[in-house]
Image (cartoon, rainbow, N blue to C red; front, side):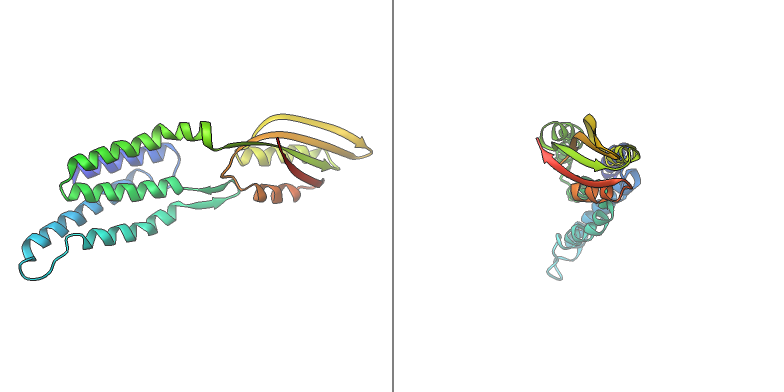
Length: 210
């Protein structure tokens, strides 16, 4: 159980550092609870298998089913897209590791935890660098220059990088604005488009892939 506590705590600290809701204490409780379940299942099997058909995997199987409720609570949908999927998967993996340690598979559990931490710490950078970035141009037709400031604020709030910006007058009180943006592909562009269309002074907009 002490090994499970350490593993759960260190995994939770990484999630706390990433500003996730399920962090230090949650991962400790998941790891220790899963470990206790496995230990109990093994002890019941040893004590009562001669009297009935005891299955040492039945209790841990229920843990893996029930852990889905905790994982679902870590998944959030907002204007930037869906977040918390990695944390939910990490909670499930931590429960699996706790179960393995409870069964006495210490080497398996520790190696699995090391691989989990490599995924959370190192592969996150590779993921951001190679797989999750997309670029395009955002064109706006506006009747108020204040709409430019508001659009900048929306893009920044949604963690969209603005690589270049240009604005031109079409005559009268009409302007066109072009934003060259880069964003995570998991971001819900349709939701951002809806928010920008609701900005006062925005007459039209469209995205154009580079």
